[in-house]
Length: 278
Image 1 (spheres, rainbow, N blue to C red):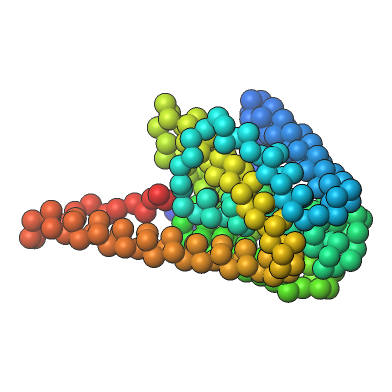
Image 2: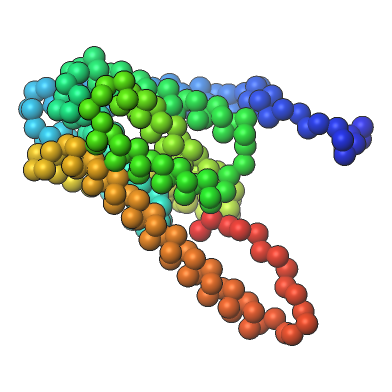
């Protein structure tokens, strides 16, 4: 670029946040998503506490959340997509986990439940802004944030101190956003234009459409074993699932490298491979 020298500092990424909002269509999209997301979470928070207050049953709470998201499965085909399926099923059941934590483990009732969800939202907001400033996405960040989410679930199951749980919920919101946003970005960038809508429908399915199964399992588990043991178990399953995916990914990459080495004649060096999220 004219006027730029190797020593010239690049513009700060924070400026990009305001720059993209000056694009009219993106600003309209962002505003609509903000309003829609706020309304959706208001409904989920109110309904979760109302159902728990009326029924007093963790199993009923889990089934209500299942029925809320189940229609997604009627319109898209189920396709297993690794980490999304693991985290969506076992790591993203906050409409069930948070009210049970508030009532059964922390004894803070509805006001405390609202504060827990507010902390989760605040963490998500900070992560969203931070990702705009930092930029970039890679497999290592996705796996690290998924592992952090699993650890936070375990710590939430162990914590009986309300301020500590508030902080953990904020970290859960942060790590959840750091996990989902790069995956979303990479999928949209890698998918051909004609297939992008279908690929993103799978993304939505595996993040929200698998949640009903996890919600039902968590609700029944909380009634049977208690909310603490159930959340710890879900955190362990999330961590185990991500570890298994890493092992399978490493084996697949090793097989690709072996085939590539056999296909390259001696003395020739093939082109470097760009790491791609699969």
